[in-house]
Length: 332
Image 1 (cartoon, helix red, strand yellow):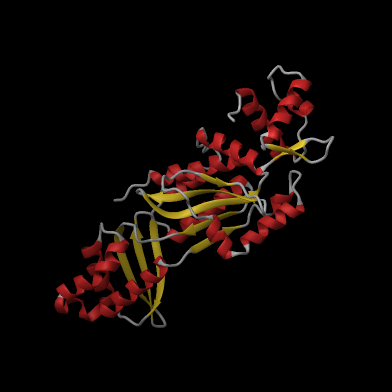
Image 2 (cartoon, helix red, strand yellow):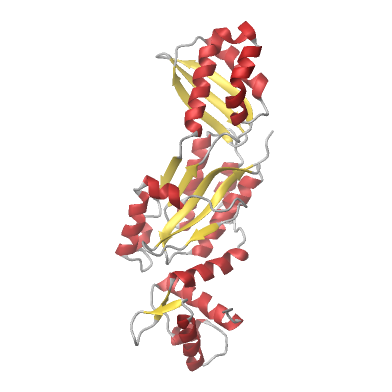
């Protein structure tokens, strides 16, 4: 059954008031915050109907009502259709994602930290894959104690790695020049897949630094198959503020300590680049997530985790800033 415009407004207002105050919703409370021009009796009747339709439930026979998972989902689906980025409090994000001189892990970590601070909820970023990133330059630098440092410039920032390998400065420079010359403008996946073919075609040119190249490609393969999680708990303490509840907080914090559950929570269902919301039922933990895409390719997923009763509008707006900002990054 379709909701009338009046019932839509009442339901959305009921959800927003419950998110704000964590207090059961009554007809009198709705009347105080709406301008629908309805009597208390009419509002009570509409709340009864919304309860019968499964959007609200009554805690006690004579008490107010609270949203059900179905009610939250309806609210979120209507909310996300018109959500717009509001970047007044998130200028840091734009500065961060426009910089390609930072390491990719620093950028991902910075985005998670800023979103957690802005939303007041724990935030998780999962790096899905690096294979679609466009290579811009590769620098290989010898270090002390038989190690080399690798800086791989990509369309989304630098990937940094330290490799246990002895190599002199000349071989490192030759390997840097060789890889940059042959793979600049290509994806990391292309380099990984085609490096053997390039080596066989170069005969003896690569022999002196072949071990460097092989070790580097092996390291990239390993990174590419890892699900790197960055968990930001800045918002965890605030779960108990604003009429928070200990049981809600415990459920959220238990998810943050379970890597497998976090990976499942951050899986993007569609490939359209949209913000998605899972309204938790059993564990009553909700996730608002979005893909982090660079040049049309998904690089990572970001998710904000909290109780059913969380500020979906504010979270969606914060994620919208990140999603739109990253879409605008262009490769050189």
